[in-house]
Amino acid sequence: MWGDEVAREKYQTLTEQMFYILVCLTKEACGVDIMKEVADLTDGRVIIGPGTLYSLLDKFVKEKVILETRVESRKKNYVITDLGREMLEKEYIRLAKLKKDYEMLVRGGE
Amino acid sequence: MSDTRKRIMFFRFDNYEKTEKKLEKLASKGLFLEECGSFLWTFRKGKPQKVKYTVTYFPEGSVFNPGITDKQQTYFDYAEAAGWNFVTGFNQMQIFTSKADNPIPFETDEKEKLENIKQCMKKSFLPYMIVMILIFAFNLVVHFNSFKLNPIDFLSDTSRLLPVLMYSAIILYNAYTLIDYLLWCRRSEKSIAIRGTCARRSFLVQKIVDTIFLCFIIASTAYLLFHLALKTSFLFLFLSIAQMPILIFVFWSSIRYLKKKKASRSKNRAISYVVLIAADFAYVALLMIFIMQFGLRPSDDSNYRTVDWQLTKTESHKYRLYSDEIPLISQDLYGPIDYDYYSYESELDTTIFLSRSSYRQDSPPAKDSPPEIEYEIIEPRFDFVYSLAREDLLEIPGWRNNTSFVPISNKTFGTVEAYQRHYGKKQTGEYALFFKDKIIALHMEEALTPKQIALVKDKLQI
Image (cartoon, rainbow over all chains, first blue to last red; front, side, top):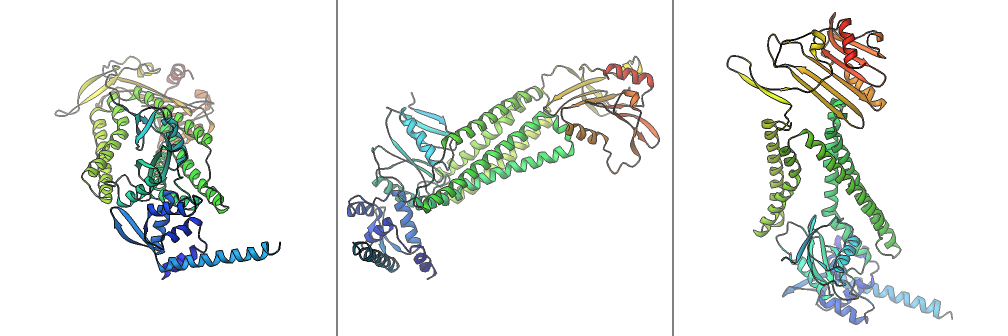
């Protein structure tokens, strides 16, 4: 449980790359798929380099944000955990709040 | 004809940018990296091409790994999917190449990148640097002790002074590298905190430091070898120089052999280090045996003859009788001596601190051996060397309580300070003479008569 707290503490906000990796892993996927999918999803706006992808997945597994499911002909597959979902949800709420504040304070003020 | 070429690469493990630039430059000249090592890198010759290289660090990478680990393979697979092909690695350092014009950057999150670099550097680069600094610092301490024991011997010996200078340079260089890396980490952290990238390094400063360091090491090694070549035998010289390369070769052979045998990383590391330490001890023992057998002086020094000296009825020993020119001989002081086994030795040492000439006329041990004399002339170049030499010369160990240096008139030798050693009340033939810019120590068998003093002054040009 202590590890969960550390992860929550650490990822109070997610980087775009972390966000999209977790979004992709709401369905089981392997690293190479994630890289391609994120690029497709964002029309190439968000690119994840292989080194960064490896570090992030490694860290997410260690912090139990994602889970290694199975190894299929050398490909490691991962899926998000409850803790990961919780973090995504939190990030969504945070972004939604940002959006709302912007609309109210900036757009609404026009 | 071989289409590969070995090159000496003077690279810094933590400076990935510089290595990348260098590899790209070599590729544009038609040399493509095949394999890297701690020193010698292998390149394949081909058509000059514009290729990108990226140098990254993988925490699990190690020269002791029997092969590519599963995790490493996953890492390579990700890289390949992004258009980066693995070329070679050394410890944590991994090198990839891409022919694409604008390949996906290998690292897209600067914070992760820095964290990863820091983690990897802790595994081999930092311990290696610290161990190097400690080893050379330990060497300095050993030398400092030998300096304290006999400062004048030390300061007049180039073959001890120069290594001290080299060790200091190595310590400074390693400390510089270490500090440079730590400062880079701090600058990168600051930059990343405001959403910047990892800090860039100035290649120019590093190039200047590297060049100065390299020139210094090469020049001082060459000087040291030249100096030693005059004083020691070539075989000994060869054995001393060959030590490092031979030990490195043994270490790497052990690593390679165990890799072939698929030994695990920890096993390979443990065995290879034991082999290295054992080989080091064996080598030093070999050197010691060599010194004991053949001595350090060159064997082709023709300025001596060897006599087989009967010590007792059953025991004999070989003595070397030298015939160097020395300014003052026993015959000058005591008149003609009919004796065939005198050895005349002179030795001149010059360093930046002082020049010292030592002279000795002695004979193999015998009951009625003729008078022997020994004297040295020290010319210090600095005041502190003068006072060190003075202290050294006048020092009497605490346990000798019946002997002392008694001042004598400065008029006798024309000195600024002069002493004669006494045993109890008896005057001896040992003198410590201090002049304005030189010091002379005389070791005669008996106190000198005024006539002999005049002769000494004449011969030694006092």
